[in-house]
Image 1 (cartoon, one colour):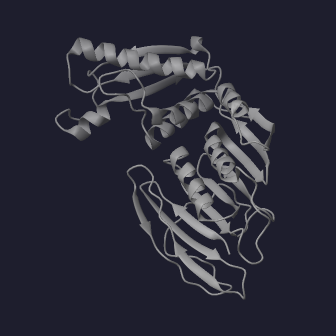
Image 2 (spheres, helix red, strand yellow):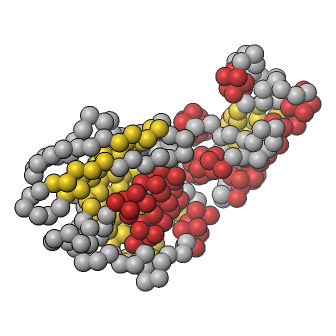
Image 3 (cartoon, helix red, strand yellow):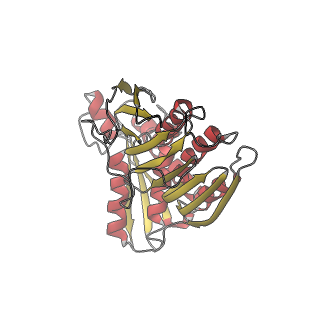
Length: 325
C-alpha cells in the first residue's frame, strides 16, 4: 500500500501508512518532517486491506499525468519526475529512515514547488520483504532528489544501484553539476538522455518578458540587506530565468534594479545598479551571452508602493526585466 505524502508551500503534512505483508494486517503510522521554519503536522491514517490511504489533506497536481498508485517496478527504487509546476516521487524504500531522508531532501531542494510523494515502506525484516537494500541506498536516493533541481524538466530512475537521468538541464553549468556529482560506492549513473537547455527557441520578446515576470512573481530574487549579494535561495530563480532567456536568444535584455528609500539617493542608485550587474553576471555564468544585457539602476526613484511600511519597502526592492527584439 503506498504511502501518500502531500507537501504544500507553507506547511508540510506527511501522512504515512506502512503496509506489512502479513495476513493483510495494516500498521498505521504518522510521521512529521519539518522543513526550514515551516509548520509540521502529523495525522495517522487508519485503513483495512484495499483502503486507498486518502485523506482530506490537499495535494498538488503531480508532475506527470501518466502515473499509477504504486512504484514503477518491483524492488527498492524511486522514480522522480519534475516540470515547472510540480515534483512527483514514488517508489519503494526499506523503511521510515529512508523515507524521511527523501522527504527532507525534497523539501530542501524544492521549497516552493508543490510535491507529491507516494512511497511503499517494506522493511527488510518484514515477512515477504524484498531483498536487503544495497549499501548507500538512502544516500543515493536523497542525492537523486536534490539533483533534480538541476533539471528544468525530466525524470530520474533509481533502480537498486542504477541511476538514470533524462530530460532537459537548465543550462550547461547545470549539466556539468550533474556529471560531477559523487555517488555511493557501487552505484552507476547514466546521463545519456539529458540535454542542455530548452528544446526550441519559441518565444518573442513580449512572451519572454511575460514568462520571466511569472518566474519573479512566484518568488522574487532576494539580496542581502544593503548589499548586491543574492541570497542562496535565489539561485533557483536565476536558473529558471536563464532557461527562459534561452527560449528567446535573439532578444536584448535590460535588467533594472530598484531599492526602497533607506539610505541616500546616491547610495541607493549605486546599490540598485550593482544588484542588476550581479544578476547579469550570474546569468552569463549560466550561459546567456553578455552582449544581450544592459544594467540599469533606478535607486528609490520608481517605487511601486509607499516606503512608509515594511511591506511597501519590500515591494520596492526589486529587479525588473525589459526585453526587446
